Amino acid sequence: MYELFKKIKLKNLLLLCKLCIETEGDNDFVVSKYNAYADYYQETFNFLEKLHILDRNNESHKYVARKVTSPDSENIDGFLKDVILESIFEKEGEVSKEIHGYLSNYIEIEDSYAYRPTNLQRNIESDIRNLLIELEVVSYLDKSNTYYLNPSHFPFILLNLNKKYISADRFDEILKSKKQLGYDAELVVLEYENNKLSKYNEVETEHTSQINVGAGYDIKSWEENDEGLIEKYIEVKAIQVKKAEFYWSRNEVEVSRKFKDRYYLYLLPVDKKRKFDIDNLIQIQNPHKKVFNNNSWIKEVESYHIKKNI
Image 1 (cartoon, one colour):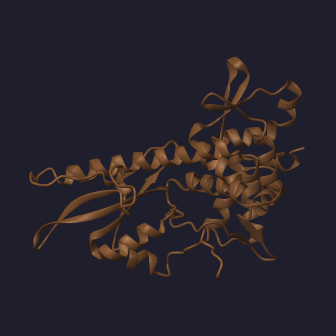
Image 2 (image 1 turned 45 degrees about the vertical axis):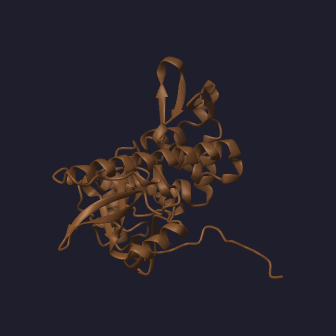
Image 3 (image 1 turned 90 degrees about the vertical axis):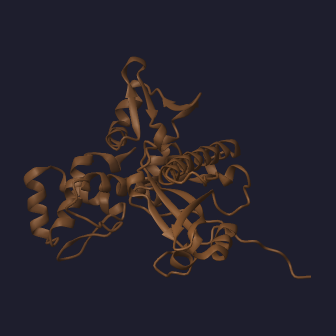
């Protein structure tokens, strides 16, 4: 059980990924460089290959996962940890199956998920558990000999595990958690807009989503142009750091088409500890044109409205 995780260490996974990203990927060079700093090359490569992060042909190693925009960044380790997490939870395969099996041991206790294994189970699960601890998915409370899932990962873990194992009540709780995250993001943007408007006494922002859920935007604010102050309409989306991905309802899209340049998408990055990064807020004016009708953004249909012709 959990054979795939034997001899797998996060530091070795990161090292091999960085060698493939930062070099030309020559097989002999990558292997020799890796072996100079770490052990278990073959096990490490096999694991990353199963996650579709690395690939190899007769000549070179290739990094094939989510594109690295700045390989010289100081936070390359953090970026690669996110890539590994996404691959473990989002991509089907042997690794994901074993992760799912291990996490199924955790039971809901009040507002947390906990697992207290026997000594035999602890020994059997040590490799998979220790990797999840390194990835900050699992933590350990020594006093009670209990392992816990990191609360900041609840929505991410539960939504990306096989959904057939999630009850309706649990799925409702996940949606509630995501709704709270969206509301918190709106409050951050409200404060941001209020600070910008502080010099104008005659106008104020409106938290529209709390007044009219069908408005097609979350916040009404103001901006200055040649004609003076005009209203603008803001739809707020909390997004993962370095991953501009969000859900946009049909109504929101239609309202954005109607208001054109007066409609904005605010994409607010949030990390796994639910800390918002307002300094890297992405503001997109007229997103109907720049996002919805722009081929550089990928649109996927999540559901269909079906009716029979009579």
